[in-house]
Image (cartoon, rainbow, N blue to C red; front, side, top):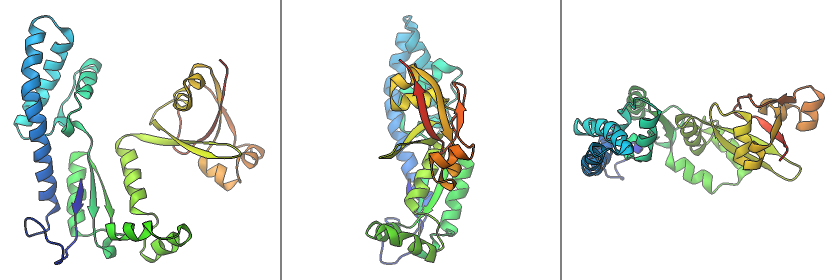
Length: 264
């Protein structure tokens, strides 16, 4: 949810006041009503099929029935607790809107972009209580950065007390919320970033590039990102003994620079 967290008499609010918590609750209510309407049609049909011996429908009736009860109580479907992997699978397949993780983006004035303000502080408290994520951005700053030459952006951000753009903070928070991480492949002509879920092992990461890489995985030549940058690339990392040979059980770390060896 992008929430207004700034005061500006020239930008009117439909309620006549700035209240990001109320705004978030209004949107959440609308989303819960949408899910409620959907499940009130789907659950009775699943219950009927389950009673006729359909195992998949029986699983759906149980887990989605729990979600329906929560929605009727005014609570989001993400509070549903599947009892096993099968219920978790069916619940994920239902694609309920309020089952998705939440990221609150607090849009503040330029002067509050570095530390936020009272409005954004309330949003961060709400996010912490819900297990959600929140970030502070200034849409005005982002709009200005978008039209600025890349070489000038660092100095501009530094003058505002910022280390990175709001967009970068949103991406970082999104990755954290979705439990994702990035690894890199680097060649003579290009470098590419790839995304995997946290906890993925080297063969799974290789499979993000091509299924043959995962099927015929032998090993991954791996360099930590900081070492790769500090030592000037693969050759410097190799000479410094920072290039590691990792096998099938290696758990990929955020920022790993990897070269996969495979045979099919």
